[in-house]
Amino acid sequence: MIIAKLHIPDGFINIPISALFGIISIALIAISLRRAGAVLDDRTTPLAGLTAVFIFAAQMINFPVAAGTSGHLLGAALATALVGPHAATLALTVVLGIQALLFADGGLSALGLNIFNISILAVWVSHFLFTALQRIFSKSKFGVTVAATVAAYISVPVAAIGFSIQYALGGTGTISATTVTSAMVGTHLLIGLGEALITFITISSILTTRSDLVYGYKPKLEVRG
Amino acid sequence: MKKLLGRFYFAFFVVSLIVAGALSYYASSHPDGLEKVAEDVGFLDTAKDSSVSGSPLADYGISGIENARLSVGLSGVIGVFATALVAYLVFAISKRLRKSK
Image (tube, rainbow over all chains, first blue to last red; front, side, top):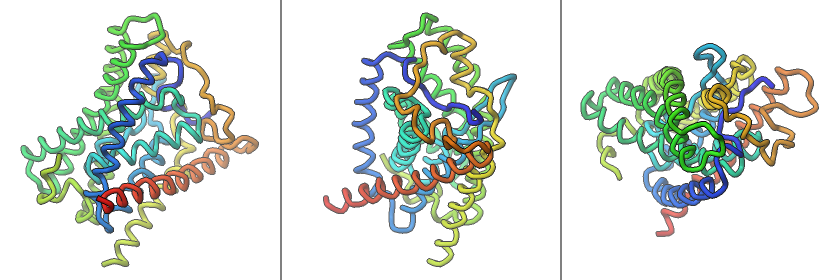
């Protein structure tokens, strides 16, 4: 096996809690499905699809972080900056669905857990951080790049906290939730650096070539719920 | 402008194909953050095999193809096309939902 597994497998979290997060995720995806279409026009809709494609591809590249550990892109902050939070939720849900169903990466019963952590929690935290940081750093291309990069860094430990909460609620292991949380956050504070780097490179390349397509770089479209 | 836009999207797609089809072979095979934590802290044994672990594409390879580079790369290419297709459908539905309001 060359490509490491990326997502929560079946068994880590019990069925009731997995089902609960599945239901929450379905409800929030339905909202995003209705909202995303309003944000995307004929020019930017392909970008939303290609964001999913690129994140699928980039997630295949596990990068080494520390002794015996690898990390991989989540893509939540990148997608949010490129196409807005609702379309980002949809794009990442597509990626996680393909990975779970075709590649057996991430359990089927755990799909709701993975979608919640990456497509919803990491996306919305990224969105709020991104808009807040833009207010501090200005809405210039530089500001957009800095905001997306910082949001990317923070989104990784945030997703790790998402898992830790799920573990505290329904973990099947005997290890205490406190131990799991501190290990998860500690490791992912390191992995976040890779996320920040990939996001920085991608967002600055796209801003250089086609900044007009970037959702986060449209001051007029900035105020959205 | 329209033509240039098409070119930009085509380039974005080709970059994704290269990343999934060629660069993926060089990915680190160490466990990722979650798996490593589960192993170190001690709950990795609670993981169960996915119910689709028998999928011909399971674990980003193609069953039956011995050559690792080809197996991973081809599975990445298939994944890129599958993601593009499903994403296209999802965003088409999303656009339609908006128009029908």
